[in-house]
Each structure stands twice: as C-alpha cells, then as structure tokens.
Image (cartoon, rainbow, N blue to C red):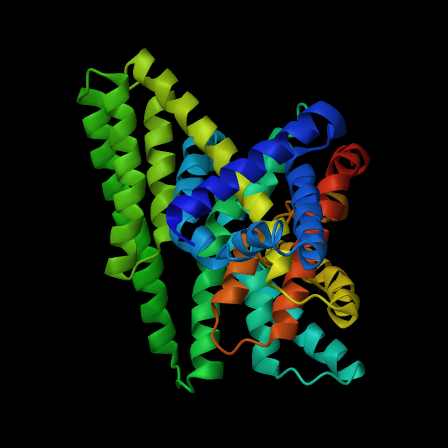
Length: 414
C-alpha cells in the first residue's frame, strides 16, 4: 500500500465512522470509532469470501494497512507535539513531581509487577511464555496513552483539573520510559546482550537527557521564529517543520523522539499562552493543531479497530487478555501507591493520594495504539502475546474509557 492509498483509506473510513457516530450513536469518539472500525474489519472479512471480485479488493486494501509504521513512524510525533502544545503548562508545573515519578519509577514497578503476574498466570494455564517475554509485555503495556486519555477527557464536562493534569502529564512522559525499558529488555531476551548498570545509565542519559535537550532547542528556536514571523500561515508552517524535522532528527541522533516532541510542544504552548506570539498567530496555531489532533486521533482509533484483521485473536487470547486487564490494573494501582508512599517517607509527609484518588488515577490510565505498535515492532515476540496486547488495549478503551466518567463521579470527591 502506498502512503497515498493509506491516507485515502484512513480518511474515508474515519469520515464514515465519525458521521455514523455524530448522526446516530453519539458515543465518546474514541469508543465509537474503535467499535465501528471493528465492525468494518469483521464485515469486510466475512463478505470478501462470498463476493471476492467485488469486496475482495476493499478487504485487501484495509488489511494491508501497516499499523506499526503508521503509528510509530508517521503519527506519533505529531500527536505528542499537539498534545504538549495544548497541555496547561502552568498546572503541569505544579504537579511535575508526581508526574515525573509516575512516568519513571511507576513504569518500572508496573513493568515488573505485570510481567511476573502474567508469568505466574501463564503457568497456571500451562502456557509457555518465558519470563523475559512476560516482562517485555509488561513494558509495552505499562505506558498510559496520553492520546486516548485526552480523547476520553474531551467527552467529560468539567473534569477535576488536578486529575486531568496528572493523567495527561504522565501519559505524555511515560511513553519514553516504557520504550527505553522495552529496548533494554528486548536486547537481553532476544539479542543476549549482557547489560551493566553503567550501560543502562548511559542509555537513560542519552535517550532521556538528549531528548530533553533537543526538545528544548527545537522549542526555543521554533518559538523565536514564530515570534518574529508576521504571517500566521508562516508561523503554522514553522510549527509543522519543527514537529516533522524535530522527530526525524531525534531518531537519527538516537535520542528520544517522544520526549523531544513533548518538550518542544510544551515550550511552544507555554510561549503562546504568555502572549509572546501575535494574537492572530496564536489563534491560528491553536486551531490548526487542534484540528490535526482531532484528525490523527480519529485515524488512530480506526487503525486500532482495523488491526484485528492482522492479529489472530482466539478464545485463548481473549481469556488471558481479560485476566490481564485485572493484572494491569493492579500493577498500575501499586505503581501509584508505592512511589507515593516511598516519597512520603523520605519527605516525612502524608501520601499525596488517598486510596480512592489512586484508584481513579489507575482507572484513568487507558492503554492505546502505542502498545499495539510496540508489540508488532518486536521481532520474535510471540503472536499470542501480540493478541493479548490487542485484547487488553481494546478492553481498556471500551471498559475504562466507557466508565471513566462514572468513576469520576464516584471517586473524585473522596
């Protein structure tokens, strides 16, 4: 499939699904697009066998969508840049301490808890996953998806500001931590690389520190040019160049493109909110990137539904996947409570989050397309674990995303 065919397919399916939801279903967008695209995938699969000459080409076109390339290589940088641009940087600064430890120590705790619990459960079902493979699953399923979370929050009127800041901020930064954990574990499991503490520390410094530094440079230079541009159209083009070139160059420099885009977006968004740009440029920039965010979000959730065509989901995957939903939630909850308790003991203060607030933070940690893309990107990763990843992500979007508004009503005031 060419990029033009991919783009045309995604535009057509997303527009069709969006119309059905807007006209008839009226569900939260993330949930509606995922459900409709699943029906499209299943429907074309079933009909293509009966009408191969008519529906077959459509089925092959839909099936040939490369999820991993579309998400990791094309969409992720733009989505994170847009998310960083629109985050309330003032509120994020207030909550930066819990956001950082949730996105770092929290991801590590969640990775190992999830991996070990899955390894134990797999043993009960007499399934032969190695401990290393289970830990890799723990790493790729641990990051909460800022894109899915923001999509869910858009369907909720007046959500608690601190909760939104914490979940969104964590979602922006924990992708980088999870990807680094995934790379390290994959090297150990599949490449027999002997890692030392020094090697891990060096990787962390290069990936994270380099990503922050490059993100600051991209954000500052972009802001400098936007501030001096007289045309809002030119300012918008500069921001597109920053998000495109910044992400590509980060990958060539072997620093975190994820962190680069988040940091650059936060800096540019911060400048716009402090009125450093002309009023017209700020308005056009915000409107443009909000539209891009909406379009790419739509593409992403349609892709999640279509991914069913290329991932073999059987009864085994559904059963283990549903068990893993519980495992992932428990690991997520403990990854919030444990760092908060440790930090409280070190600083000699009470815990920042009650059990109710921690439960709400855990329930709001929705998984999304990044986890599927990461699972598909690992050479040698078992098909069964890819299918389980898909079931967990799908269940997270539908169950957690569908009930999050209810959970806020029950737990936010505790």
